[in-house]
Length: 92
Image 1: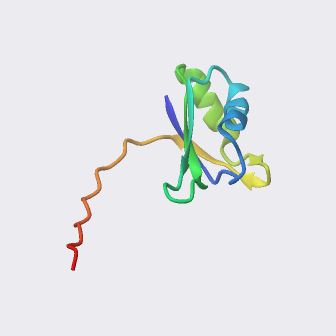
Image 2: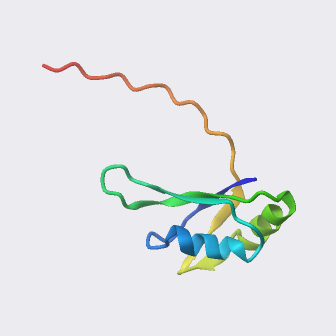
């Protein structure tokens, strides 16, 4: 199950997030979303857990839990919606 994790502390690493979710079962992947220009965390990410029951337990247990001073927002990730493409500016 793909899990959305919001309100992440900006200083948390993927390894630390893996450890937080690892208390509830196997974690197959962790991805913290970063700004493509600055490389800084955008404050949210995704955790993939292969076992449905473990993922649901992690969601129930971690939603609202304080990690490094921030209360996490944790729920099942929804499929990404297609956004309309932005028009390219023509050079002057």
